[in-house]
Image (cartoon, rainbow, N blue to C red):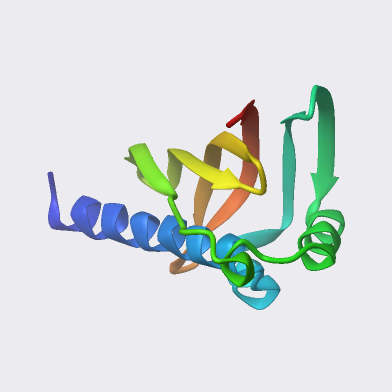
Length: 126
C-alpha cells in the first residue's frame, strides 16, 4: 500500500468517525462538514422505502433528541472500507433511536477533502 493510499484510508476513516460523532450528538454543523451538499439518502426505514435530501434529513435529526442527550453510548463501527483513487465506500453499523442500521457510505475526494456523497441503508429492529 502506498503512502498516499494509506493517507487516503486514514482520511476516509476520519470522515466516517466524524459522521458517527455528529449523528450521535445531533450536530448538524458537523454533518454539513461530512456530507457533500447534494448528497442523498435512501433506504428501508420502519418497513418503508425512504428517500431524503440533506435538508430533509437535517430537519429530522434536529426534530428529535440526540442519542447522546439521552445517555446512549455511541456504537458506530466501520465493518470495511474500500478506497480507490478518489472514490471510497464504507460499510458501517450503528444504533440510532431504537434501531440497528447497516449503512453504505459512498465518499468522493473533492479538492483535498473526502465527503460523503450518498448513504444507502438498511434498518433492523434491535
